[in-house]
Amino acid sequence: MNHLNTRRLLITYFLYECGRAMYFVLITWFLYQWTEDAVYTGIFVSFGFLPGLFSNLIFGVVVDRSNRKKLASLAGGGSIFCLLLLWGAFLLGWINPWVMILTHMILQTMGSLFRPSLQALVAEVFEKSNLPRIFSLSGSATISGSLIGAALGGILSGLLPVSISLLIVIGLYTGAFSTVLFIAYEPSPQRKPAQTTPFFQELKEGFVYLKSNNMLHGLFVMMMLGQLTFHTILGFLSVYTSAYLNQTSVVYGFLDAAFSIGGITAGIVGTWWWLKWKNHLAVCSLGVMMVGLLLLGVTKNLIAVVLGVILAGLGTSFVRALLQSVQQMATDPNFHGRMASFRMLCNQASVVVTGPIFGYIAAAHGVQYIFLILSMTIMSGMVWAIFQSKDPQFASITREKPA
Image (cartoon, rainbow, N blue to C red):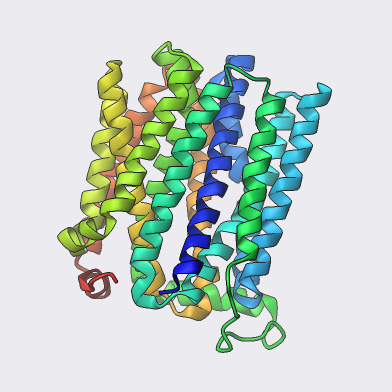
């Protein structure tokens, strides 16, 4: 395993996620305190993923046809430009909820290109046997960045103007952009040149490949539940902290950080979890998520809430990192980009649909009911995971010992 590339990759994930988490805490807290309406929070979360429903179909093919390092760099640079525009709007006093929502939509679109580009790059740079460990480490780096970014965002939102804090966010994104440039990478000669197949034919080939691979259907459903839980908790945690717990932005930042602690733990023990549960790892991971969500929905005790947030972070990270490893190991290298984007399409569609609904529920009945509804949904997913655990290909891959 190339240790220099590994370090650069982990630094990229850490800085990018630190910036993303800090930005998200700052903006969601500011948005709810300004509007005092959870519906705007739901729209913010939902509309952020709306462009991805269309762009993911394009980005998947682009990633499989193009230089993945260049694409990740392009997306990183686009994110920086978008944040500069948002910073300028705050500085000049041109900010309103819809400016924040529109900017968030553009930033999320850049993320929809950055993430599959980087994931496909990882699958091409590292040996297949190393992927579970690499994705576990990258998950740990990502969540570590999220922990620090969330804590910083929570603290700084009460100390500094948003325009000043956004400069720190821009610096973190710039660091991630820079480290991508230093990852050593040569495109695989086995991948087809962009000119050999028409774009829409490659898109169709991706759908045909997905249709013929039944195991991926189950993986996508389970990872969709993990991502839906992840983004719903992050999106509505500001409303939960302010309206339900009646706490400050500092508590919000540290609850967001506690969510990240669960993710860091998942990164550290991910290989052990894989070896212990093998083909039952999805069932057990979803079970951890469900317990965490139930705690968030039934208590205001801060210690129990922190435990619930940690468990939810632990479970979602197991689902997102380990099942993603299974997906990469089960996917033909020529389809890594398209399958990553199809997976993101499923994930983002779930958030787009549920965001406004959850916003209405939070405003009309209470944000805690969102987490209770999610826990019941996860319970249904566990039934799906039980059937998935019996799939011969899934069982074969999860019996392999990660490098």
